[in-house]
Image 1 (cartoon, rainbow, N blue to C red):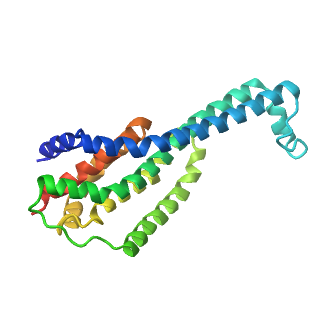
Image 2: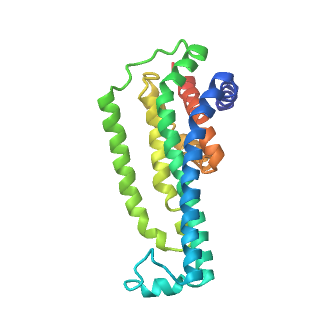
Image 3: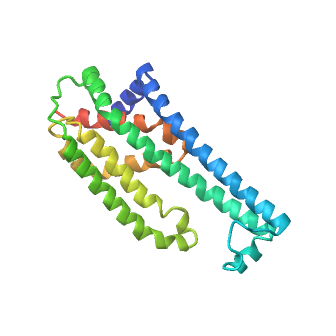
Length: 240
């Protein structure tokens, strides 16, 4: 059953219609985000380089922060700062790109569900989709819980090793909840909520794999639609 779902997903994803829907919306935010990050990072590096050569750190208050101004005079400090900027900046761009991709795919999900229903599952009757008020309130609640989880995870950034993956926990929660809600809110089938509940462990495992792939910048931007197609096929295949 699941192999069949995967094969159907691959066939649909590599059709001309879905390839276009996958590529078109995501290259623009990717280019913009990396452009902003690169420009901002290069400006910061230029300020540090000029300050170390001239001894002028006018971009900060040297009287208020004498120790910081002193440390910025060392090239090794510049290397550490640029390394940290590169690591955490890249992570930030990837995670933000993932959120943007999820938002864009959210607008495409009803069309995806409709196309797949008409192509493979005409026998599965739809139900009334959530109205705008319910959708906004449900997504708002998910986002509030995400923020709470994010704040709980922030103190762990001070711990070595843990800091590199701790922020993935709230973002996985956001990814998991938004992905499933996007599909369920479309009124895909009467049994959809029950199917998700009964297969929650499997779906957590699958979406964890999807989330891990999403952390790879190019994969994260191109495969969001693939994830939606897979989950749509999965729910349809178990609906009667």
